[in-house]
Image (cartoon, rainbow over all chains, first blue to last red; front, side, top):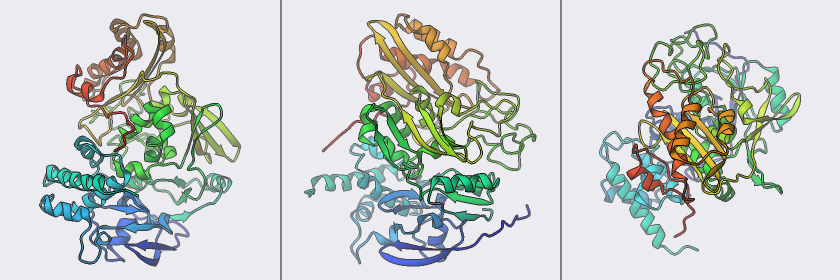
Length: 169
Length: 355
């Protein structure tokens, strides 16, 4: 199909804080956040699976909330704070959710794992899951074709249990 | 994705003017449906108008007890809002039965009711579709139509409306507030979505240039006598094959008021207020509800692969009502799942829970 060229499809300059670093970036309006991360910014930790919001591999946290970066236009997120899988660890110290995925063997091929972990961090932040069936329901936006679900739920449950035990201010 | 220009107006008036001035312009809010449609080349806007700069994120209950949901409030923020959980739990249940946590965080209330059908032919530009390209025909009518309509369809279109939230809003008699170049107006929910007729390209009754600003819902009087039940191919993160938002108020053992809206069966949430009216005053028995379901589904027709919906729809149209009578108590979702008559999957209503 011949590509129609729309008039005045100018670029936009946006400012994003990505994994703690503030960046000023020039984007086309049609660039998704996922393509911006993986392309110009070289942050390939965030994965592209279906590119249609069905698999969850592209899940990142925007201002602390998990979303599908493939269905988000980068230009719409001017000023936002974005956390990807690459921004969760502190130096060599893994984020508790990353550590839990390792300890519970919660992956096989690993392709869905960055999205699973970001989604699980979002789930804990949201505070709506407590029981196992609630974790399963609220992680349903992340598909694992290797079928590591049982261990993924174990990993998320272990972090929830740690969070529940930790003194809250 | 096709190229487009992008603007971010700061007022409703600016946004409405920009939308009215450019026939190729489309509004983006959460983007979870529009970006997907653009990637499939189903929708090719010349300009995308980002309305996220508008002050439409509020969720509030006014002095008369009416709930006002800002068009830009996220589905998740709406479903988990304490006022919505306590006063409009049917709405919370319906929202949380839809999509995934990620999508509910991004998707907005306005966008939810404006989302397009998930008809396979609508989504595939290489096939005919009267909704996507008027006059090109309907691929689904004699094609793959497992997910399609059994009620209110036309020879031109058998698509269904995919929203769960809209089914609850229909049952709750919500009002959609829109604003455009001609000013503000309120559209009763029944009049907001339309049946396809010979214009399946029109999903709703909004005028060009109008933007949804809020959805309002009056206080409901059904106590705990309500259910959102969703039947689907998998237990989470799937569109409804048939869903029902049911609410009932009893006077002793007699039906005082009954509201039932069905999802997954028509081009809009399917409600028959005339039938509901006929059943007020009748005894609240299983037989009555079965008769109600038969009347609600009067005229339903299958198109081949969706014939199973004719058998599937009656039970959810009547069983949730029976479950709320005669003993006035809330049905445990777990109980419903484990020993329900058809093994329905059912998203538990949100329960405030603190550790």
